[in-house]
Image (spheres, rainbow, N blue to C red):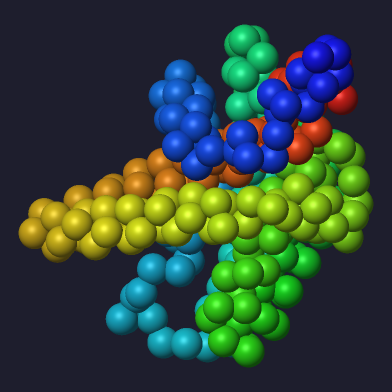
Length: 248
């Protein structure tokens, strides 16, 4: 058997494994828990400040304007945070030390395409949700790795979505299962933390919500990056250094 055929067999599409993605996600996040959670905590801050229910606040033009502005800020910070964690996760998988300053520079350099991807994914998911829940889940699965495709391959928003659709093809049930496991665990844990927060008082509830939002944001970002990496390895036979060489 030639080296080429050995390589093709080694990186067959079936080599994409949900368990492997989850294990690597836990591994990468555990080594960088503090820096990644700091990044996602900053991105989650507008949700805490503006979107928590406040019975004493009467809706007005000013509060609606502030809420809209907060939503824009939250979207920008969320997209930037995902880009920063993406670069950091790749650096970790390459055996390099995570540098938040360098990661932020990379994120800022791609902020406009990243925002374009975030907007398109949101719009397409929203439009498909009008049809029913299932079409929206299909769209979310197809576009699951749009963000890393945008940053790593330096693609525009539309091409990033197309690239994600190509990479997930053949493994979409696995990608959906991965996302579903994360979502179910996150919802159950969130309900438990809310119950604890109710017993502990508003301050405890706020702290738990903030911490959980930062942690789930970091985990989700790393999981998306690892999924993108493993899909490319399985479908294209590339390695981590080849994928991340664009950053060198």
